[in-house]
Image (cartoon, rainbow, N blue to C red; front, side, top):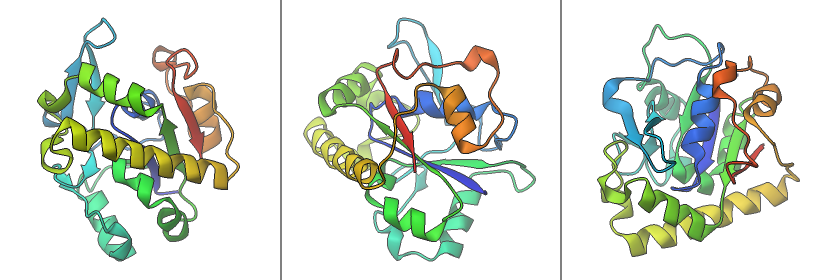
Length: 207
């Protein structure tokens, strides 16, 4: 297993899901840097919530909307370019637009799991605005998502495709990051990163 793919709409709290498995001993964290961080206090406590590379149209790692037309070799070279060549471990690859390419990812990397994160559309938009909206410094959302009206429509489409994949694959709810780590077959992260998805109002599953 080379990658763990993660899909979630903006405001789905998927970054917290990524963060709380990121410190598993089995994960390659060489995509982390001070330039790839975003802190926010939406929860009432200022926390580092965005870390490591994000792949999306118009972002630093400018992933094509038509990634399904790219070769596996080209995509792997692109994904790996965000990491240190000497990095070891499984690489978490995060993209909002993976929501539209779940079957392509399954077929192209059948040995790599896809983590799906979902919250209702209004909850996603509200949380994303509370976390900084277009003032979020990393990743930058303005080029692809443009404005709030456009963002709302994109969130709805991403969530719809995530739920379709969820139902088509008869997925089950995962309750916390310990269970997620076990499901993924990676070492459990340290206890200080424990996260209950129920308490955080997040729905998480794995394909």
